[in-house]
Length: 76
Image (cartoon, rainbow, N blue to C red):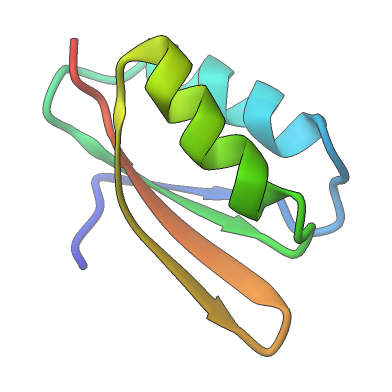
């Protein structure tokens, strides 16, 4: 999947990947896609909840060898 911006949160533990995602999304334009890379498995629960509560769309979540790649579309 194509993304406009990539955010590397490897080595960061909950809640830092979500805090970094929220900060990055604020600087983006509606319709842009943020790729978030993480190795904290808590992101699997946190990101869908964060997207739902903040009105953004989680497009995809891929796990490979303990590394997670998530795609979030800024909706507004």
